[in-house]
Structure formats: structure tokens, C-alpha cells
Length: 143
Length: 115
Image: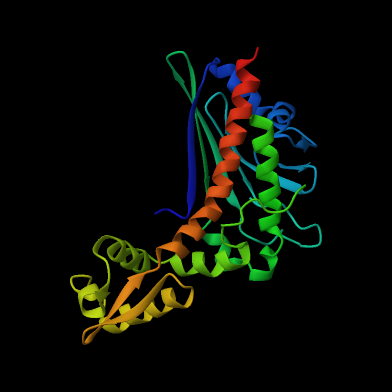
């Protein structure tokens, strides 16, 4: 039972350089992630973005070309009325690896255990609805 | 955007104390033990752990307050039992985020494979 991290691994039938561009280029990232980002990714830089209903901030942690990209963010759709800036963020890591026939991509989001300790319960109040609706949209998109 | 599709999942407000209660190695071990061995007394639960019965009791009450365990009588002894449903609901909350990543990864696949 691990409540701290989510891990995904997929093999994509595309060259590693192609996958790398889709992840490390903010414009391309925004296209498949369905988010509009306002800048380019660079280590230490905060890139702001907006979704249909909420805003996100991605703090770029590390970029190792063609291999590793990591950023921190608040994993929940934000309540515009709340100030989340002082709260702990989760870490999202993309790791690329060449495999036969394409590129293996591992996505890890970790740090969930730290959030409940720091965040007051009321800060969460509307997020369930946000994710619920979001997931429905995603299901529609991929199906 | 429509309202929650995660009807069965724990409300986020409720998930907070559950995750807080889980953020402790002894408590996770207690839950693991209860899920494998079923209802157990405090004496049994503290055996071989190097943790005092008093400390175990405190942890069990902390888990009990968020509904992860409850106690019952079995003959003369009091046993503690896992409330798996509650745990399952808390897990579902992470599953929602997990599902979002699955969907995002599939969109990425379509994006890089289609050219």
C-alpha cells in the first residue's frame, strides 16, 4: 500500500528524440496535456498555465536532455480564491529510455503523503468535484 | 464541467485525515498485519514489534478515529479489525489522479505516434 506515489510506464512507438520533444517543449507538452502554458521550460523556472477551469504552476526542477524531466506542482485543480503558494508540491518525473521498437516512458508523481499534513482540510473542499469532472472529460477524449 | 463522477470515492475533505493517519510506519505495519491476519488483540499486535502496548494502543485509536480500524469483543478479549472499505475509499482518491495520468499518457502516445 503506497499512498505517496503514482507510477506509470508506457512504451511509445516513437523515437526517443520525438518523445523528448513532446515532453520538454512547453508548447508540445501543452498540446497533449491540454493545457496552455505561458513560457518555455528551463531549470528553476516557474511556468504558468491555464486549463479550462483552473490554473497551474509548474516549477521546473531538472532537465537532462533526452532522458529526464522533472517539475513540481500542486496536483489538484486550484480554487481561484485560495492561495496555495506556501503549500508542499508533488514532484512529477518523466524518464525516457530507448527500448526495442520505441521509447519507454516512466511517469512518477510523488509527495502525496506530505500534503495532508500541511494542508488544512477546508483547502480541499472543492477539489473532488474538480477531479471528477476532469476525469470524465479525459475519458471522453481518449475513448 | 459536470459534477463528481467519483461518487464512491472518499470526499477529499475526508481523505485528508485518513492520509494523515497513514503517514506513519508503525500504523502502516499495523494495517498490513490486520489485513493479513484478521482481527487481533493488542497483545498479539505488539508482539515482536519492539513497540510498547501503550504505543500500539495509541496508534490503533488514531486509526480508529478516521475509521480505518475498529475494535470488537471476541470472548474475553478485545480485538482490532481492519475496516477495509474505508481504506479502499481513501485509495480511490489516489486512483483518480492515477487515472488522469493514464489518460494523459494515452494522449501523449497518440501525439508522438501519429507522425
